[in-house]
Length: 232
Image (cartoon, rainbow, N blue to C red):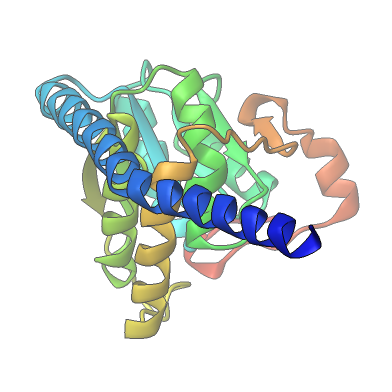
């Protein structure tokens, strides 16, 4: 009896495994079909967004020169919201906008990111909440093409068209590019482009520039990058 029962269970297991393996091609085809529909829809959305006006400016931290540039942009286009991801210390950015007499109401500072991948990881949900469909990505020549490819993959996977604006720098910039670094970040971006469709990370360090308490910072003390030419 025991041998028959064992033999019977083995037969049932083989049949179950066999059915499972036969279903795999169908599952793969189904997933491929869903993926193709998603890619088609996203591509159409991106192409449509490319002809629209800029919805927001997105600054990647790494150099105070980029923040000076976006402050001048804010002065020319005060209606465009600006997101600066892990840029210079808050009081330094405040002083830049104050010096340029640029509006601060439409400027937000994201302070959670600790890498270029982190810039997109934490900033994507913010741009989505703003309803952005076309963004101006502000960075430096030394940050390319890695930053541009990552933006096109991660933001593009959500139907956001990316227009890159490059800001020239002097001296040693905050970003140095390596082949392995680009390969790693592009690979991570491809995975995150899919996972971010269902995962929405939140940053607890998002500050409106107008809310920066300069009195507290003056008492605490701070330093700004010398290229900003800012005095305490």
